[in-house]
Length: 153
Image 1 (cartoon, one colour):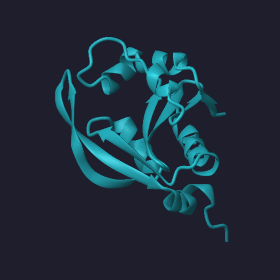
Image 2: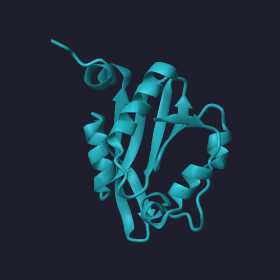
Image 3: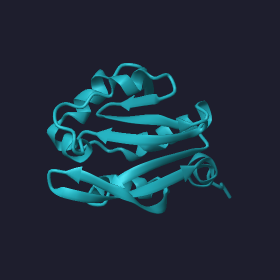
């Protein structure tokens, strides 16, 4: 079950796990710390066993989601629950995310969640070089149509 947290300890442990860190640190050296983002009341951290979603408020009703999961943890059910939370309990009308072109797991999750591809949105500097980033969006309307209240004949 997903739960809101105001403590970055668990998400930081996931972020800094070697198999996760390589996908999320960009050109930043050293440990990552989401504590300042989590402390900001405008942002929402949702956690499940082995994973977390940090929704950073961009403006009213608009968030960018940062998804972190330990290797081998299934994320789809948690992602559906997180979207439901954001659209029903929080005030989100749309959620955007950036996915590195070579992160197959993140791409699959984004597609299975029915995010709409908006196009290339820049590059991520990594140890392997520059990786293109693809930008995606999930709107309340699309989520209702595909996840929250699917048509029941």
